[in-house]
Length: 532
Image (cartoon, rainbow, N blue to C red; front, side, top):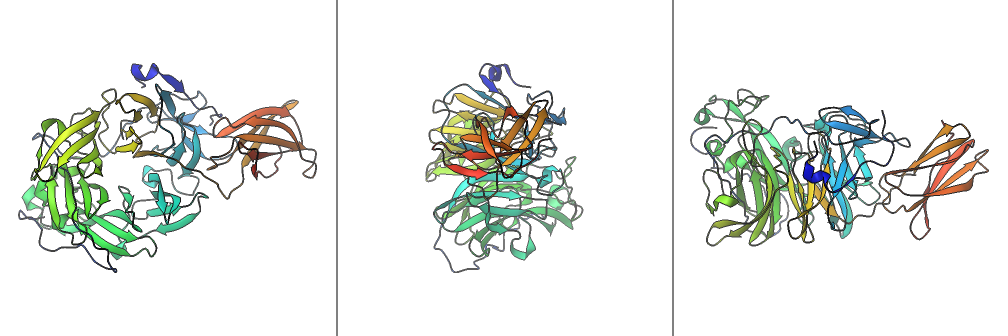
């Protein structure tokens, strides 16, 4: 349900047609591996969390709120309608956009965990897509575990690229593609054959990327009420050379963090109880990692803490928040079950404070700017951004866009852009279960594919539909018709009016469309088709 505050702004709905283990901490062995010729690197910084005794466990399932959509949209009542198109088989959630101020320049990069339309999307401020990475259409089952995660624009070898993680648990891949959406790098496995986890993909700026993996490991869990020969889901952070795919460094959470530091009960309903490899206890739930100078900042949701790891040695430098914090964290700066921790300067970091867990509290959730004094070991709140008391018990992010902040409220089914005065200027909703993270940046897409076209007869006229997935520079469409494929000529033009544009023209035997940019340059021409 859209809040009254949301309704007060300008609401935009889709313009294109819609259709149918052991008490003693395991800290002995360092598992950071130096496998390649090295970079000289040093120390890392991470942040922690404050808690009440009853605050524990982690997210398992969501009942995301439905957004407004067309009456002809398909989808479930629980997760909101699905948007379909005529010219292409691509699908996406039917998003609702509300603007209430001046937004920052750029395109929005996000993903939707919608059971009927899992996808990654590049959007404008109206929620209209430029590009859809549709998990169904690329041949995967309709399952949120098939979803796209961590979609964002990056720079690699001085050139703009897109990055994301996608696929089924145990068989995910990390993609780097160019402006033509063709793969430049695809990483499918990490060291020892471990699979890539969805929670992180971060370019380091020096030719490598951080990826994470969740790995089952046998451990004595009697210290947390589990079996002596128990199993945990351990968190690994990998640094991978993008040019070769080789792992150059690895840090393992259980080498430095005792399972007793977790706030997640081992017997929590719906979670692994540690009795077998197929039901491992998840004491850490490592969900973000960031290279910052000579450090790696790591977030572990289930310990409500951030950790600083020295990049060159793997030495744990400090804990921020949680049960063993090395910092004095002000009460209003405290966080719990957090996501997406990022340094913004040597004295400031941001994170998404979920402040909630599926079977517990609490909320509301918020994006927080924290002032960190490393010498004094103190953490203070600088800014906190909330929206309509939304509670996102899982996922979420905080991203800077010039002097604005783009916040995904995760399972709260909302992406909000706040201006420099912390006022909301844009809201997007209707993502289904959640929008994992959200970013905003410039992007020019020039796909190698051709535009898509379809036409539907209406007596003496027909409606022509045109789209081109990923093409960001289309300003106008030319409609071409003819009695045969060799006699095609222009009969009309139409301005691009969203992902799919349409207009009525006289019925003809054949139809095609041609895309032009603002200067009138032809960008691409569709195949010639017959109307339905």
